Length: 277
Image 1: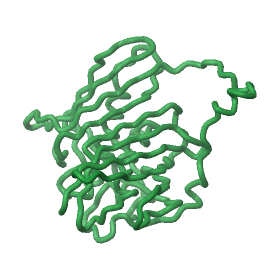
Image 2: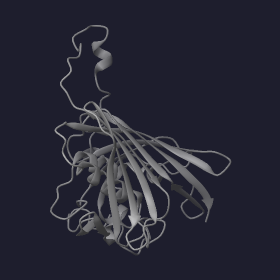
Image 3: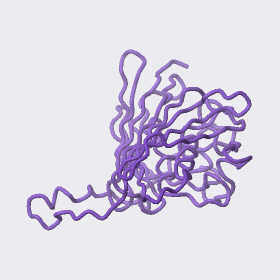
């Protein structure tokens, strides 16, 4: 982990209204000229949160990002539109395009549900226990650092803009991995990270932290990311209990339970393109 404690810089710089320029901190592991999926999801989350206020306290219950092409370190246009207005449920669609050509690089859809105080029967002896959140495991202070950027000779998101604290490490036989992850730089300068941006930015790590296939022989690139949340995240650390699955026909997936330090907050999934290097 290089520079994760300094907190200097940002993933993007604002060029103009709706136009951003990725920094080197947004780079990914597969190609130094292309972005990691985490910054792509995080800047989309930021754009969704900037949709014009309509007076409803919206909670993003689902965010789905389809990465149609590698996203380069070039000026990007991010457009959002409310395609399903409402007072209880609303949908925001977003697109990320290459500013120079208008080529679509990623599409996203955010399902928003209004936030409200709804009485729950927590005291009911039968229903109450089932309403309790799944507790989180030990916190990040009990985790260990594991270098996932060994041999990398350039600045990148996974090496320089996040901090990892593993409770369990990848095993040769596969299985579930638990990693606490914290973003250390904002999406845009002088803008504090929001809970949604923190989750969106790190959920894309699932295929990397739970990898079974060797990095030096195989590619397992996610073509999408779907995040479901039922609980607002608290704090800076996102806990990921992740597992990768692989089919014999070049397709895989990751499956992740998401936590904050108080307990379960949601789930994320990725579809994986499997190839030989």
